[in-house]
Length: 222
Image (tube, rainbow, N blue to C red; front, side, top):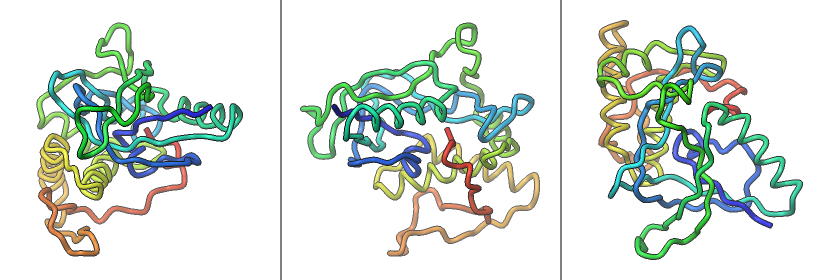
């Protein structure tokens, strides 16, 4: 027995469970959106964070990482129980085709699990829906919870996508809007070198914040 799960948010940089294989690639006809509330990791019920989920969108591709768990039912059960706790705000598990770079015609894997959310505020209490970019940025800039602040989640996602060689323009735009909000709120420094060891410049100018180290509870980040 074996199962694969696709990560497109914090799973890209922090799977948090024992994996046997990691493959960088993409899924089709989905795109990231920051339309999901997080009330127990990066936010609170009073001040929910915004974390990413997937929106069906024909022709889109979403890059991320697929993780494999092998070794029998017990290992698979443990991994899935961990993921279900971590991704508790996501109310669906969707099966998708997964493609590797360089071959967009034939899927590398089929039946890959991805955690998604129902885009309906009535049936899904965690679904926030879209909002103006400035409003989302202000919410992300100020929300925080037991696992850290919301902006750190966004900036780490931005960097993780840069590190795998597939930046997301939407993530970059939102991250830069958050930086503008933070500049207004607190006079945040405008430069910080988070470039790779090769000193390659990031399209998104990562990141102007001097962020504190992640707490141990990041293993349960959504």
